[in-house]
Image (cartoon, rainbow, N blue to C red; front, side, top):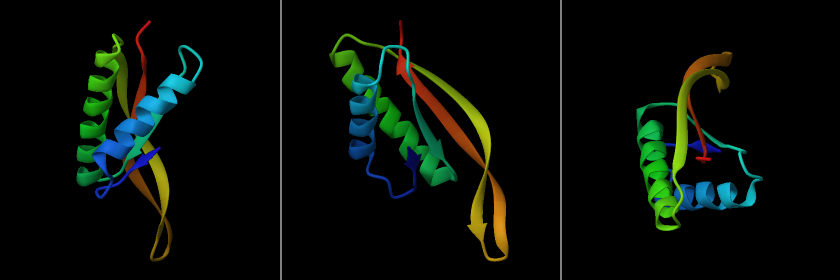
Length: 91
C-alpha cells in the first residue's frame, strides 16, 4: 500500500486492518510513504489500525525502514527515499 499526503487516515487504517485479518498468520502488510505529509498520514493510520487491533485483543508488530524508489520526474525517473512500514500481528 502507498500513503500520500492526502490519504484518508480512516480508509488506510481500515485497509491495513482488513488485509491483516485476511492474510495467513505471520504475514505482513507494507505501507510505503514518500515525503513528510505522507509519513504523517501513514503513522496516524497505523496508530488507528493498532487501536482497532487492541479492541480485538491483538497487538501489532511494526518495523520501519528506508527504501529507495524510482519515481517519474521531469527528465526521466528520479530516485527518492521512502519509509517502509512492515505491519503484522504479534505472535
